[in-house]
Length: 239
Image 1: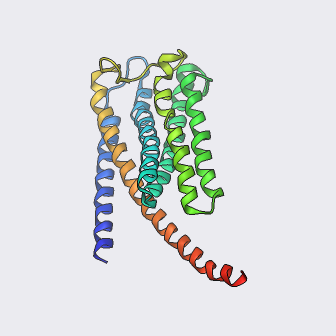
Image 2: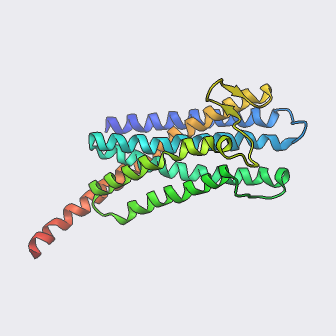
């Protein structure tokens, strides 16, 4: 009982901190000066870029938690991997929608088969397959093992997608924040602080959603275990 109350309190406090930072980020974004060329469209950056970062974080988490499951054989890590994959898929969709809204007035079309966009779309296929595979395997331990391997391989998407604009030049702009070599922020400095706050807010959002989804997954696992235990005597009796 005490641990449940402590867990609920931690989740509530984390949710409150997430909401506060999101509101601050929204306020900063709406009050940021307009761009000379793009006008108010520049504000899409404060959602589009953090959403892309969150998808990277979530897919990286899927691989890391899957690896920890393979090492520790603790289904808690499998639940976290699954939860992280679901969050990654959700925010990949947000990234794509935000990018399309930005692309139409700047490129004249919602979508082009640019390397960055194509690899982003492929990530939905990879992690959609990851989630689909989980529904097709009944045995919890085997499901966790197979999912962990798929999640680890899928993590290769992150560096490929990040470097796509450098390796295959297309219409998509290069990285807003360059992390390889000399770190560089390719946007007006006034937008850097807003983007930093938005990224912090989205990171907290990831942690909050991961925690809530993992709690729900633990309950689903407990129910599945009870159902399997209830079916076992029947199977023995038939034998």
